[in-house]
Image (cartoon, rainbow, N blue to C red; front, side, top):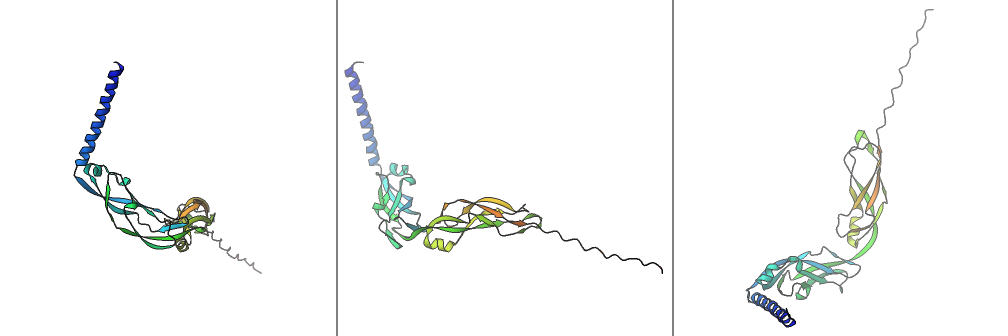
Amino acid sequence: MNAGAQTWGLRLLALGVAVGLWVNFSFEAREAPSERLIEASVSYNRPRGFIVLDPVPSVNVRLRGSSKAVRRLSPFQVNVQVDLGRYRVGSYLINLGPENVLLPDNLELVEIEPPAIRVELEQEITQRLPVVPKLTGEPAGGSTVGEPAVLPNQVLVTGPVSRLARAGSLSTEPISLDGHALTFDATVDVVSLDPLIQIVQPFKVLVRVALQPPQPEPPPPPAPRHGHRGKG
């Protein structure tokens, strides 16, 4: 094949691709518009040193586009972003609009439900909280439970001021006493029941569970011995 024929072949191929794309876009443009309701996750751009209390996790977003574009839409392609950079401690009603919604270019926003969300910001601090071991079950052999020791007995956490004050302490994973009659050690995770209280370090602690076996009963005192008197 000479150079001229090869050039014309490439031109024809490019023309065919262009025509195919034009037909595809034209067909999509001629499709009847369709709408779809998507549950979109909400993300918060919060100022440094602050945290959102009980954030709204998602809102409903209604979108419109060609039936093909709507059919191919994945919920993960839609996200609602709330910029809180200029806010400080307090409760705010945030109006949601097109500027808050990230979506594919071939779709348009119809509505957001609800159109506004309540956001409460609180200062986030770092401090240490004591760890209280959680013991379950019953020791074996009639042993009694003494005061457990925790090492370290405090962990570093971050969270909202009010939640940390309310929590007061953290717990460990349950430590079973079943089958234990003597003092034993257990390395367990520290647990935060509040998702806004995050453990920084350490994530595990050593708990020494003191068990006291029952003391044996002292033997009864010996019976008194009676002597025999001889005849005089």
